Length: 304
Image (cartoon, rainbow, N blue to C red; front, side, top):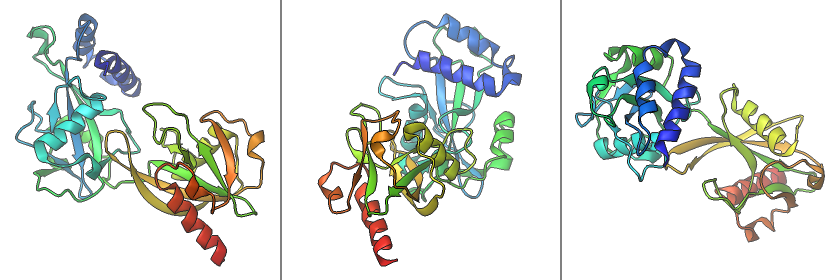
């Protein structure tokens, strides 16, 4: 992980979203400009919000906030992954019991400067990056919770007040089928770091800040990836997958009838698109729950 480069990017994005905090984070920016090598001089904390609008606290926190947190290590995939590691190490809650929020995704909800950092040695943490997670499943361990309204962290409390703690679909995929009963599948790139590399899967992708609903997400993805603009989409079911960090990812699956020629589509991601009858799909190298989804939908169509 190149955390210094990532931190500059995260900080720039954060200030673009909260330009009124530029003065509050001035010494953080100065410290980063002086810090040229090694891991980023920050701590990364997790703001875990449950359905009762409570925040997870821990006695093992490295900062006075009481939030699970840690200094980034070489083995962390990202700054967010450092916060996620802290949750598991300090409370026992697994990444698979948590998910991201549509409002913040992988961006920090808050960056809190350490007021004493200016007098510390170079390389000491100068700020706490706070990443927000929702509880996707009841954790298998007891953990201390505090009502969000009772938090003494003023800036954080105001931001958390807009969150309801209820997981929502972050990704959306489309079961596209034709009048012959075939399914349109997408051969993904063989590239490290993406979901299901080199596998056949459904078209779709993740929520972006401009998406208001999962249908907005899938319509945008279909148009961007393949130039498909179906007239009608129907919600089929919700499922759950896990991302590279082990986080739960709620996904809404839509269906759409389309009789076009995939060879004529302006594919911008992946290798190719092709139609497959349900009987052929099990012989493919598939990503995730693609086979189960195709078989379930083909049974629905057959019984209609």
